[in-house]
Length: 392
Image 1 (spheres, rainbow, N blue to C red):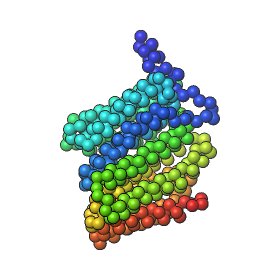
Image 2: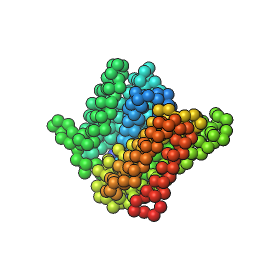
Image 3: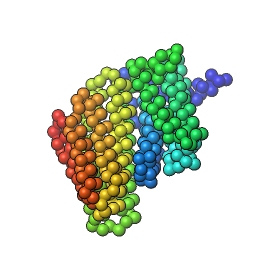
Image 4: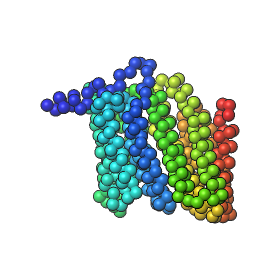
């Protein structure tokens, strides 16, 4: 009875059937799944705007870490699962519903909706790992996903502890994030089972690279939505339009650095590299998460500058203006270091310049418009001259 139910819910046919040299294509339901993250990223930006303190930033970081890991693990799962199979679609819809609940809970995640946020995250993690363990039953990948699921269960205890212990919520959730993010680096080690070797995860990296490119576009799209929404609700004075122009070209510059500087090298490396799993773990799971986080903080900086272009800058504006692009560039440098095996020092110089410019703006009480113009100038210079080893 149970065996028959497992065969119906998780048939082997739900896995992608690919030739040796074939790469998975991105399916329509994967793109449909991503629509939830358009809403999620907007929610994250609004959370950060509403909690412009160091504590608020730490809370936003914790929420983002959970959101990114839930998306990342789902993207990895669809490298093997066929989302166009009926059971694959069923799983994607369930995961999509969990992601939507996380987004709905986000504004009150550290208060009245903590249980909804953490519960949806834990259910999403255990459902995904459990289903993949079932569909891979009898194979090494089944054991891999079972051990991943066990680590998700361990982190889930801390997610739920944070719900039950409000005064310790942030600490419990940060510890849960550390467990989730450290798990791949210790191979999901369990007593008596050992670790899961990297080579036992037969990843095809070009599919995952494309999925990460798509979610980065979503992060930039959220910046456009915030900027457009702000302009719709405000009078279009010359100062507002000037600041909006700066904000728009900041978004374009992030796109330029990512897609012109980085993606061609990434695609080339994945085509040449035999071990896609190790390469994808560093360059996609971690580096891309940092880049997406940087894009979200940059969107917050743009909104703050456009909303008050002719007012002297204050600490939250300066911090967002320096941190957003710097976080993005740090992730970009990490990606470039992994893909091209060299450190792009131009990116690090740009980070120093961003911090220095923002410090000057804060110290001398410059206007928001001047702060944004300087940040744009630094990023434009990097976009024009910082593409190492290639023609600009």
